[in-house]
Amino acid sequence: MTKVALNTLTVLTAIGAGLIPVMCCAYALDAQLDCKSNAHAFITPLLNAQYIDPNPMRVEVNSVNAFRPTHDSNLTAFGFRVYAVLGYERDDTIFKQGSGQPITPSAYGAVVLGPAEAVEARAREAGSDAVVRQVVPLLLTAIFCSEH
Image 1 (cartoon, rainbow, N blue to C red):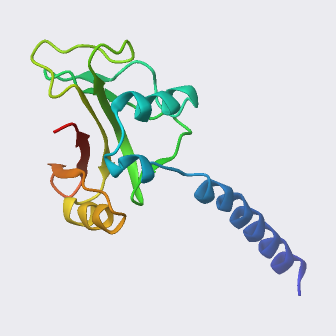
Image 2 (image 1 turned 180 degrees about the horizontal axis):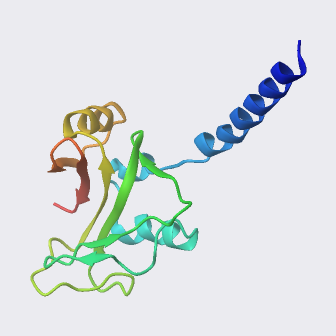
């Protein structure tokens, strides 16, 4: 083997080894999106681990807070990259109140990058009964759990 070929192989191996930890270190929200919890229990561990920014990037009129994932958080939901984490719980200081009527006493979820049909199929395969709605066609999909 020539020196150039050996150096190329060494570089490719190093790059490949460097990518493996990135892929295996994703934090999957699948189990929490089973809709058997509440917003406080969903959001608090993400805040404590600094997976999401503590200040919501948006607060909807219905009080749903949208939190931006931190730069290195690598959050996923049902295999899709998380764009935002959603949550609201009445009388909880983690969440800011919107100007209108709150959606429910507690609601939580995520907005992911992916088409609604594919996201819903994976959510159902995982046993989640979350509401899955398209936000931006073929781009963003909301996965949402709330009290009924």
